[in-house]
Image (cartoon, rainbow, N blue to C red; front, top):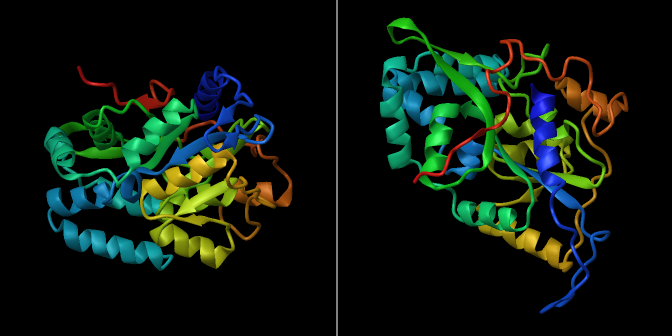
Length: 311
């Protein structure tokens, strides 16, 4: 369940040591009171990795995939279909009997965005919790993270292989009643967030807009950047993870103030969580009814998946 998933991650985060007011090469180290604890959420396709892997797999492994991907993308961004409908149409055509081949192709052809691995290691050194949240599919996310020897937890849609090479997409982290998205990033970002923590969302595309609406701090590029500009969602622009790490470095060193967002959520948003937080019906850590249940039934293991380190 989503809530138990986030609770487990929160318990892990509480074991971090206190930040002490010691001298640093740049002067006194800011105290814990000055620097909030961060909880970081990172999108995968087009953010942690350079390309949109899901689209590449559709184009390469589905008959007529390039045309299909273009048509679905056009329908999505014209408002004809939802994010969940778009992805279900595409992913359902992936050949279930070629999952290993697709996984191997992703490992060989999908690079991390510049600075991504260094940034994740930097957060690990700082004992700052980070979760990858993706509207993509578990099998290729796990394969790429394992290639990089990264054991960061991730939440994503899942591909269920059926008979005769057919597949179906499962949405174990979807909203119980809303069908806009496959994975509900807004509910994940706002689930059981202690008041001392500042949520940070990093993304690039359409599946990230509702997570960005409810996050305290947003790093945005590409389509998410344009969406934030249109919707008056405060954001920090980035192109690679070196940019983001420099910003975190400045926050931790006290060279720059940590941004404070005046309000969360958008009243005009189609996302029910964003609406509820904006209207005051739900606080930062208290979500509307229906959160934490899965329309497809709970996954066998509701803990965030991890790409085990090889060796």
